[in-house]
Length: 433
Image (cartoon, rainbow, N blue to C red):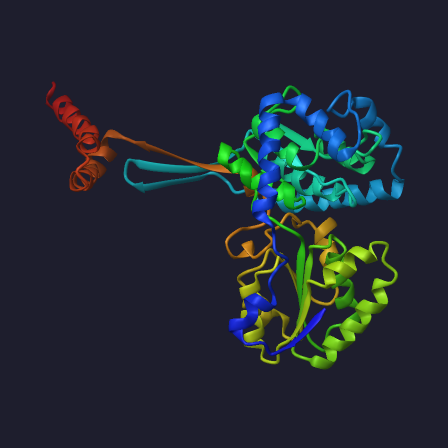
């Protein structure tokens, strides 16, 4: 990791720049994938499975037998852990539900607003070097709570044509029955257009590599919504001498091991503390099974010594991290000053990995600085907010003239007339005996 000391604000963006995404080159690959899937459907998906996953598939759908067998392929300990995580995630996301709003804004004019589930959603679950069965919980649980009528899960198969058993087990536990053996940009294309085996959806969720990310943004051109723009995982830890260097190092490495294009950042007021953390990273790195990946990610990463807390918090908000860990003496003051972060972890005993798996919050979060203007996935991500209004004759008599004046001044005569014709009708009706 690079070590910076009190960098000036005008240099922050350059010195903390994320790994460059080669968007043009990636789109050149993604576009023809979309075209082939749109044209050839399942045939194209099977061909891509041979090309990218090195497997020949007779069927793209996971069978009931495969799902049932998955229960016996994972340990009892893991099953219990998944169930506990599911319960926490369900409890926190169910609590996010808001009641229907009904408000009489003036006599005879009633407005309503209520949540309506998005009908068809697609969940992308990475299944390569790290099969993210936890993401099945993070996306499947709120989709179920919201009441989405069709939930389609896509995840890449291994060379035996199987989806990781923990993914199948978790999907079955959540209640997802449509499980498709498709990964990469081709999975996103299938969810966008629909194929013989894959239903077309209204919104696509889930993390993925740079090709999946580009494909999701490509899908929006065809009228399909996505959860958020997302890129490689990242964490920023803000820690002072009250933090434990070994804890901080472990949190930084937990994100670095995601992928070579991940980025981790340490911000601290102490040069001495920064060096302790860097030393701990070297020690812990040697014991990681994915140390080669983490090592490469650390080349994109930086430790920043920022002696002034106000400036340090400004830097953090400017960076807008996906995950933000705050382990400083005056933690509440620091927390209240944060307005750009995907999810915040407070105190020495709140590791980021708790949120990744089981604390109850969602781990599908905006990366690459999008925390400035996007929220992470929540129950609301699977809902639409619809509004309603009902006006009585008495209400229209009061509100109608207001609308007439406004419509006339915008020179929208038909808008004005839609009110006037009703008011005239009411006047005539009043004259009738």
